[in-house]
Length: 351
Image (cartoon, rainbow, N blue to C red; front, side, top):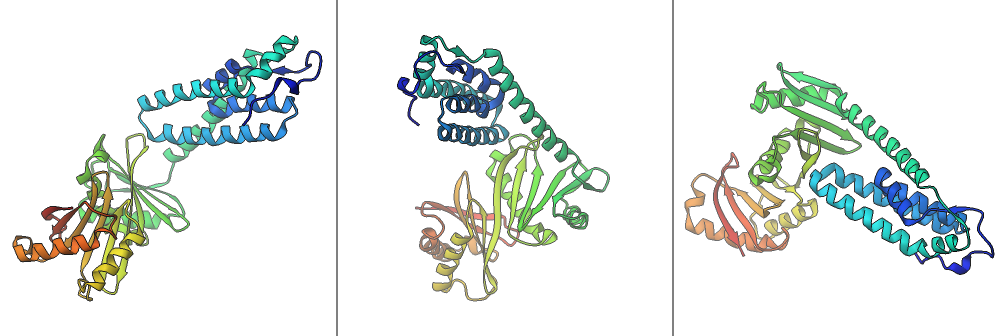
Protein backbone atom coordinates (compact mmCIF):
# COMPACT_ATOMS: atom_id res chain seq x y z
CA UNK A 1 0.00 0.00 0.00
CA UNK A 2 1.13 3.51 -0.73
CA UNK A 3 1.51 6.19 1.92
CA UNK A 4 -1.13 8.86 2.45
CA UNK A 5 0.00 12.05 0.71
CA UNK A 6 -0.34 15.32 2.66
CA UNK A 7 -2.31 16.73 -0.28
CA UNK A 8 -5.20 14.43 0.63
CA UNK A 9 -6.14 16.75 3.52
CA UNK A 10 -8.56 19.62 2.95
CA UNK A 11 -7.65 23.16 3.97
CA UNK A 12 -7.87 23.95 7.68
CA UNK A 13 -7.67 21.70 10.72
CA UNK A 14 -9.33 18.29 10.28
CA UNK A 15 -12.28 17.68 12.60
CA UNK A 16 -11.40 14.03 13.20
CA UNK A 17 -8.56 12.38 15.15
CA UNK A 18 -5.88 10.09 13.70
CA UNK A 19 -3.92 7.46 15.56
CA UNK A 20 -0.12 7.66 15.28
CA UNK A 21 2.29 4.74 14.98
CA UNK A 22 2.85 4.58 18.74
CA UNK A 23 -0.87 4.09 19.31
CA UNK A 24 -0.93 1.38 16.64
CA UNK A 25 1.96 -0.35 18.42
CA UNK A 26 0.18 -0.06 21.79
CA UNK A 27 -2.97 -1.68 20.42
CA UNK A 28 -0.91 -4.41 18.80
CA UNK A 29 0.93 -5.11 22.06
CA UNK A 30 -2.33 -5.93 23.82
CA UNK A 31 -4.59 -7.19 21.08
CA UNK A 32 -2.40 -8.82 18.37
CA UNK A 33 -1.82 -7.31 14.89
CA UNK A 34 -5.55 -7.18 14.14
CA UNK A 35 -5.98 -4.56 16.88
CA UNK A 36 -3.20 -2.38 15.43
CA UNK A 37 -4.57 -2.89 11.93
CA UNK A 38 -8.02 -1.79 13.11
CA UNK A 39 -6.59 1.59 14.16
CA UNK A 40 -4.88 1.98 10.80
CA UNK A 41 -8.16 1.01 9.09
CA UNK A 42 -9.96 3.65 11.15
CA UNK A 43 -7.41 6.23 10.00
CA UNK A 44 -7.99 5.28 6.36
CA UNK A 45 -11.77 5.41 6.81
CA UNK A 46 -11.61 8.91 8.33
CA UNK A 47 -9.51 9.98 5.36
CA UNK A 48 -12.12 8.67 2.94
CA UNK A 49 -10.06 5.71 1.73
CA UNK A 50 -12.42 2.80 2.40
CA UNK A 51 -10.68 0.31 0.10
CA UNK A 52 -7.40 0.76 1.91
CA UNK A 53 -9.20 0.47 5.25
CA UNK A 54 -10.62 -2.91 4.24
CA UNK A 55 -7.26 -4.06 2.85
CA UNK A 56 -5.25 -3.23 5.97
CA UNK A 57 -7.88 -4.84 8.21
CA UNK A 58 -7.84 -8.07 6.20
CA UNK A 59 -4.04 -8.08 6.32
CA UNK A 60 -4.17 -7.66 10.10
CA UNK A 61 -6.58 -10.57 10.46
CA UNK A 62 -4.37 -12.81 8.28
CA UNK A 63 -1.19 -11.92 10.17
CA UNK A 64 -2.94 -12.44 13.52
CA UNK A 65 -4.11 -15.89 12.44
CA UNK A 66 -0.55 -16.87 11.52
CA UNK A 67 0.76 -15.48 14.82
CA UNK A 68 -1.79 -17.45 16.84
CA UNK A 69 -0.95 -20.62 14.91
CA UNK A 70 2.77 -20.14 15.58
CA UNK A 71 2.14 -19.35 19.26
CA UNK A 72 0.17 -22.58 19.54
CA UNK A 73 2.99 -24.72 18.17
CA UNK A 74 6.31 -23.00 18.96
CA UNK A 75 8.24 -22.76 22.26
CA UNK A 76 7.60 -19.64 24.35
CA UNK A 77 11.10 -18.27 23.74
CA UNK A 78 10.60 -18.31 19.98
CA UNK A 79 7.14 -16.77 20.37
CA UNK A 80 8.55 -13.89 22.42
CA UNK A 81 11.13 -13.09 19.75
CA UNK A 82 8.49 -13.21 17.00
CA UNK A 83 6.12 -11.00 19.03
CA UNK A 84 8.81 -8.36 19.60
CA UNK A 85 9.84 -8.33 15.93
CA UNK A 86 6.19 -8.10 14.89
CA UNK A 87 5.55 -5.18 17.22
CA UNK A 88 8.49 -3.21 15.80
CA UNK A 89 7.51 -4.15 12.25
CA UNK A 90 3.89 -3.01 12.60
CA UNK A 91 4.96 0.30 14.15
CA UNK A 92 7.27 0.91 11.18
CA UNK A 93 4.54 -0.04 8.71
CA UNK A 94 2.14 2.40 10.36
CA UNK A 95 4.78 5.13 10.24
CA UNK A 96 5.58 4.43 6.58
CA UNK A 97 1.96 4.24 5.39
CA UNK A 98 0.31 6.90 7.51
CA UNK A 99 3.13 8.91 9.10
CA UNK A 100 2.95 11.83 6.62
CA UNK A 101 -0.80 12.21 7.13
CA UNK A 102 -0.49 12.05 10.92
CA UNK A 103 2.30 14.63 10.85
CA UNK A 104 0.26 17.10 8.81
CA UNK A 105 -2.71 16.41 11.07
CA UNK A 106 -0.69 17.79 13.95
CA UNK A 107 0.77 20.67 11.92
CA UNK A 108 -2.75 21.84 10.97
CA UNK A 109 -3.94 21.77 14.54
CA UNK A 110 -5.76 18.45 14.24
CA UNK A 111 -6.09 15.96 17.08
CA UNK A 112 -4.31 12.67 17.62
CA UNK A 113 -6.29 9.65 18.72
CA UNK A 114 -6.08 9.05 22.44
CA UNK A 115 -3.39 6.63 23.56
CA UNK A 116 -5.86 5.40 26.17
CA UNK A 117 -8.36 4.67 23.41
CA UNK A 118 -5.68 2.66 21.62
CA UNK A 119 -5.00 0.66 24.80
CA UNK A 120 -8.74 0.16 25.20
CA UNK A 121 -9.14 -1.19 21.68
CA UNK A 122 -6.16 -3.49 22.19
CA UNK A 123 -7.62 -4.68 25.51
CA UNK A 124 -10.98 -5.35 23.84
CA UNK A 125 -9.36 -7.51 21.17
CA UNK A 126 -7.36 -9.29 23.90
CA UNK A 127 -10.55 -10.03 25.82
CA UNK A 128 -12.17 -11.54 22.73
CA UNK A 129 -9.07 -13.59 21.94
CA UNK A 130 -8.82 -14.78 25.55
CA UNK A 131 -12.48 -15.76 25.53
CA UNK A 132 -12.16 -17.75 22.33
CA UNK A 133 -8.98 -19.47 23.56
CA UNK A 134 -10.60 -20.28 26.90
CA UNK A 135 -13.61 -21.76 25.12
CA UNK A 136 -11.40 -23.91 22.89
CA UNK A 137 -9.27 -25.15 25.81
CA UNK A 138 -12.34 -25.81 27.95
CA UNK A 139 -13.97 -27.72 25.12
CA UNK A 140 -10.79 -29.79 24.69
CA UNK A 141 -10.65 -30.56 28.42
CA UNK A 142 -14.33 -31.56 28.42
CA UNK A 143 -14.11 -33.89 25.44
CA UNK A 144 -16.04 -37.11 25.97
CA UNK A 145 -13.84 -40.09 26.74
CA UNK A 146 -13.80 -43.76 27.50
CA UNK A 147 -11.60 -45.13 30.27
CA UNK A 148 -9.72 -48.32 29.49
CA UNK A 149 -8.71 -50.27 32.55
CA UNK A 150 -8.49 -47.86 35.47
CA UNK A 151 -6.22 -45.07 34.13
CA UNK A 152 -5.80 -45.07 30.35
CA UNK A 153 -8.14 -42.87 28.33
CA UNK A 154 -9.37 -42.43 24.76
CA UNK A 155 -10.89 -39.00 24.16
CA UNK A 156 -13.05 -38.57 21.06
CA UNK A 157 -14.46 -35.61 19.16
CA UNK A 158 -16.04 -34.60 15.87
CA UNK A 159 -17.94 -37.44 14.25
CA UNK A 160 -15.98 -40.09 16.19
CA UNK A 161 -18.28 -42.23 18.30
CA UNK A 162 -18.03 -43.76 21.75
CA UNK A 163 -18.12 -47.18 20.12
CA UNK A 164 -15.10 -46.34 17.94
CA UNK A 165 -13.21 -44.92 20.93
CA UNK A 166 -14.00 -48.06 22.91
CA UNK A 167 -12.88 -50.31 20.06
CA UNK A 168 -9.63 -48.34 19.71
CA UNK A 169 -9.02 -48.52 23.47
CA UNK A 170 -9.57 -52.27 23.52
CA UNK A 171 -7.16 -52.80 20.62
CA UNK A 172 -4.56 -50.58 22.29
CA UNK A 173 -4.94 -52.56 25.52
CA UNK A 174 -4.74 -55.96 23.79
CA UNK A 175 -1.58 -54.86 21.96
CA UNK A 176 0.10 -53.80 25.20
CA UNK A 177 0.15 -50.07 24.36
CA UNK A 178 -2.30 -49.34 27.18
CA UNK A 179 -0.88 -50.64 30.47
CA UNK A 180 -2.83 -48.62 33.07
CA UNK A 181 -0.18 -45.89 33.33
CA UNK A 182 -2.51 -43.00 32.56
CA UNK A 183 -1.80 -42.87 28.82
CA UNK A 184 -4.05 -40.54 26.81
CA UNK A 185 -5.05 -40.92 23.17
CA UNK A 186 -7.36 -38.57 21.28
CA UNK A 187 -9.47 -39.77 18.34
CA UNK A 188 -10.86 -37.04 16.07
CA UNK A 189 -12.94 -37.55 12.94
CA UNK A 190 -14.02 -34.70 10.68
CA UNK A 191 -15.52 -35.53 7.29
CA UNK A 192 -13.03 -38.01 5.78
CA UNK A 193 -10.14 -36.99 8.05
CA UNK A 194 -9.16 -39.28 10.92
CA UNK A 195 -6.63 -38.14 13.51
CA UNK A 196 -4.96 -40.15 16.27
CA UNK A 197 -3.20 -37.90 18.79
CA UNK A 198 -0.88 -39.21 21.49
CA UNK A 199 0.25 -37.27 24.54
CA UNK A 200 3.96 -38.12 24.89
CA UNK A 201 6.81 -37.19 27.18
CA UNK A 202 8.79 -34.00 26.60
CA UNK A 203 11.09 -34.13 23.58
CA UNK A 204 9.82 -37.50 22.29
CA UNK A 205 8.81 -35.77 19.06
CA UNK A 206 12.49 -35.04 18.33
CA UNK A 207 13.46 -38.72 18.35
CA UNK A 208 13.09 -40.25 14.86
CA UNK A 209 12.73 -43.75 16.32
CA UNK A 210 9.87 -42.64 18.56
CA UNK A 211 8.14 -40.79 15.70
CA UNK A 212 8.41 -43.90 13.52
CA UNK A 213 7.05 -46.04 16.36
CA UNK A 214 3.91 -43.92 16.62
CA UNK A 215 3.51 -43.97 12.84
CA UNK A 216 3.42 -47.75 13.12
CA UNK A 217 0.94 -47.56 16.02
CA UNK A 218 -1.31 -45.47 13.79
CA UNK A 219 -0.95 -47.93 10.91
CA UNK A 220 -1.70 -50.96 13.07
CA UNK A 221 -4.75 -49.50 14.76
CA UNK A 222 -6.28 -47.65 11.79
CA UNK A 223 -8.78 -50.48 11.15
CA UNK A 224 -10.36 -49.77 14.55
CA UNK A 225 -11.20 -46.21 13.44
CA UNK A 226 -12.22 -46.83 9.84
CA UNK A 227 -8.93 -47.63 8.10
CA UNK A 228 -6.15 -45.69 6.41
CA UNK A 229 -5.23 -42.95 5.82
CA UNK A 230 -4.95 -41.47 9.31
CA UNK A 231 -3.01 -38.56 10.70
CA UNK A 232 -0.80 -39.25 13.70
CA UNK A 233 -0.01 -36.36 16.02
CA UNK A 234 2.36 -36.24 18.97
CA UNK A 235 1.27 -33.79 21.66
CA UNK A 236 2.99 -32.32 24.70
CA UNK A 237 1.34 -32.29 28.13
CA UNK A 238 -0.54 -29.11 27.17
CA UNK A 239 -1.88 -30.90 24.07
CA UNK A 240 0.06 -28.70 21.68
CA UNK A 241 0.83 -30.48 18.38
CA UNK A 242 4.60 -31.05 18.26
CA UNK A 243 4.85 -33.53 15.38
CA UNK A 244 2.41 -34.68 12.72
CA UNK A 245 2.50 -37.53 10.23
CA UNK A 246 0.18 -38.88 7.58
CA UNK A 247 -0.04 -42.66 7.42
CA UNK A 248 -1.63 -44.19 4.34
CA UNK A 249 -1.18 -46.79 1.66
CA UNK A 250 -1.26 -47.38 -2.08
CA UNK A 251 -2.33 -50.88 -3.09
CA UNK A 252 -1.07 -52.78 -6.14
CA UNK A 253 -3.10 -55.95 -6.03
CA UNK A 254 -1.77 -57.86 -3.04
CA UNK A 255 1.36 -55.71 -2.86
CA UNK A 256 1.36 -52.46 -0.86
CA UNK A 257 3.38 -49.27 -0.53
CA UNK A 258 2.78 -47.51 2.78
CA UNK A 259 3.59 -43.81 3.07
CA UNK A 260 4.44 -42.17 6.38
CA UNK A 261 5.36 -38.75 7.74
CA UNK A 262 5.55 -36.14 4.98
CA UNK A 263 5.55 -38.76 2.21
CA UNK A 264 2.50 -38.51 -0.03
CA UNK A 265 0.09 -40.90 -1.69
CA UNK A 266 1.31 -39.74 -5.12
CA UNK A 267 4.90 -40.63 -4.16
CA UNK A 268 3.74 -44.03 -2.92
CA UNK A 269 1.92 -44.58 -6.20
CA UNK A 270 5.06 -43.61 -8.14
CA UNK A 271 7.23 -45.97 -6.08
CA UNK A 272 4.73 -48.79 -6.61
CA UNK A 273 4.70 -48.28 -10.38
CA UNK A 274 8.50 -48.51 -10.50
CA UNK A 275 8.45 -51.67 -8.36
CA UNK A 276 5.78 -53.16 -10.59
CA UNK A 277 7.66 -52.30 -13.79
CA UNK A 278 10.86 -53.97 -12.57
CA UNK A 279 8.84 -57.04 -11.46
CA UNK A 280 9.59 -56.60 -7.74
CA UNK A 281 5.84 -56.39 -7.24
CA UNK A 282 4.26 -59.51 -8.68
CA UNK A 283 1.27 -60.18 -6.45
CA UNK A 284 3.05 -62.03 -3.65
CA UNK A 285 1.94 -59.65 -0.87
CA UNK A 286 5.12 -57.59 -0.58
CA UNK A 287 5.13 -54.57 1.75
CA UNK A 288 7.27 -51.48 1.15
CA UNK A 289 7.40 -48.33 3.31
CA UNK A 290 8.27 -44.79 2.20
CA UNK A 291 8.93 -42.57 5.19
CA UNK A 292 9.81 -38.87 5.30
CA UNK A 293 10.72 -37.26 8.59
CA UNK A 294 13.25 -34.77 9.93
CA UNK A 295 16.01 -37.34 9.50
CA UNK A 296 15.38 -37.72 5.76
CA UNK A 297 13.80 -40.25 3.40
CA UNK A 298 13.74 -43.94 4.31
CA UNK A 299 12.77 -46.75 1.93
CA UNK A 300 12.03 -49.98 3.83
CA UNK A 301 11.48 -53.48 2.43
CA UNK A 302 10.05 -56.36 4.44
CA UNK A 303 12.24 -59.38 3.68
CA UNK A 304 12.52 -62.98 4.80
CA UNK A 305 14.79 -63.94 7.70
CA UNK A 306 18.48 -63.85 6.87
CA UNK A 307 18.07 -61.98 3.57
CA UNK A 308 19.91 -59.00 5.09
CA UNK A 309 23.03 -61.16 5.46
CA UNK A 310 23.13 -62.21 1.82
CA UNK A 311 25.46 -59.90 -0.20
CA UNK A 312 23.76 -60.73 -3.51
CA UNK A 313 20.30 -59.94 -2.17
CA UNK A 314 21.62 -56.74 -0.61
CA UNK A 315 23.04 -55.63 -3.99
CA UNK A 316 19.64 -56.28 -5.60
CA UNK A 317 17.91 -54.07 -3.04
CA UNK A 318 20.53 -51.34 -3.47
CA UNK A 319 19.75 -51.35 -7.19
CA UNK A 320 15.99 -51.28 -6.54
CA UNK A 321 16.42 -48.39 -4.08
CA UNK A 322 18.32 -46.35 -6.67
CA UNK A 323 15.66 -47.05 -9.30
CA UNK A 324 12.87 -45.92 -6.97
CA UNK A 325 14.84 -43.04 -5.43
CA UNK A 326 13.43 -40.36 -7.73
CA UNK A 327 9.86 -41.55 -7.13
CA UNK A 328 10.46 -41.52 -3.38
CA UNK A 329 11.68 -37.93 -3.40
CA UNK A 330 15.23 -38.25 -4.69
CA UNK A 331 18.59 -39.39 -3.44
CA UNK A 332 20.19 -39.66 -0.96
CA UNK A 333 17.94 -41.92 1.04
CA UNK A 334 18.35 -44.67 3.57
CA UNK A 335 17.61 -48.25 2.61
CA UNK A 336 16.20 -50.44 5.39
CA UNK A 337 15.75 -54.19 5.21
CA UNK A 338 13.33 -55.16 7.96
CA UNK A 339 11.87 -58.38 9.30
CA UNK A 340 8.14 -59.09 9.53
CA UNK A 341 8.05 -57.30 12.91
CA UNK A 342 9.52 -54.23 11.12
CA UNK A 343 12.75 -54.38 13.12
CA UNK A 344 15.58 -52.85 11.09
CA UNK A 345 18.11 -55.59 10.31
CA UNK A 346 20.19 -53.74 7.70
CA UNK A 347 20.62 -50.06 6.95
CA UNK A 348 22.54 -48.42 4.09
CA UNK A 349 22.76 -44.97 2.60
CA UNK A 350 21.92 -44.88 -1.11
CA UNK A 351 23.51 -41.87 -2.86
